[in-house]
Image (cartoon, rainbow, N blue to C red):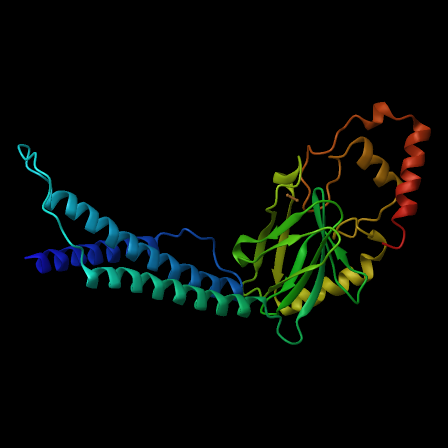
Length: 301
Ligand code: CUA
């Protein structure tokens, strides 16, 4: 009788677990996976999630079944009969979770080593974070861009630094996330697999503008990527950190950016962030000096 109850409970738990796992798997919880790393991270995610669903369903089924099946009748005021425990059951419910946790650790370690490994010949991009913007420079060239432009199916190793506080680089479709820390360099490898434009998000609370510290990751086909890079090399040299649109950084532009910051926005920057009152607060001489200082101090990138 007791054996039948146990088999029934386990069966109900297994069925409930399978049903929930199927429903969970077919609901699109996650953004599109657009990198090789995302594919293996998603595989790990589903492995862990399905193990958790199975255990949860089993425990919930046993609990609900027991509450229903072994409830006391309304007129029963006696203590339950004493029991001794069940050594076999105790061994099973210790050994199975131990095996599962070990399996999760091993699979996670394999995935982690895989996604952190930069394949030989990986491209390199230096990522600089500051309150509240991203800038991406391409070593060996004079190219600095406000957008992260990548070539599809080419592994790239990002080296991240920060000019002020801790930020964190995240593109949900790439799944990879890495802190940008002042005073040190951190790395993350991404192999984009789908042409498209994705959002770069700062995912470390870094100040008032944290929620708007966003940029784009643009994944291009090989020909478009080469075209973009050579266009940047020829046109973007004078732009310094002024974005990827090739807009010259002349004095008039700098002055406008101070007194009317929303007039011309570099890609990746949102309107309404910078105060519009500097035109009233500063005299013409002060503005001239500030523009001159900014131009001089950014010379040569
Ligand atoms: Cu930078 Cu949040």
